[in-house]
Length: 95
Image (tube, rainbow, N blue to C red; front, side, top):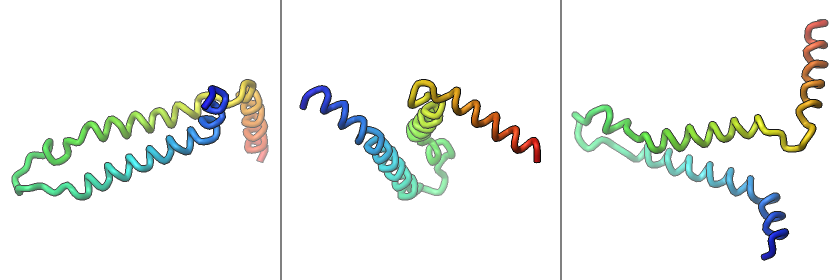
């Protein structure tokens, strides 16, 4: 596969594959948490709720998701968004 074909594949399939991977990973973590049962009644809090790697991965993915909204997909997009937001704000204030 040449470089242009790889770019075109990534452009059309990259994001859906990432989304499916995130969903599959989240479901895997959910199933792991739901199936994990304490073996003895006196288990410490840190041992039962100490799945910090999953928490860090989920937090990191969520922050990357939010960061994606701060990056314009097309150059020149943000000035249009600002103008549109200003018009909407003006309409709301006039009501």
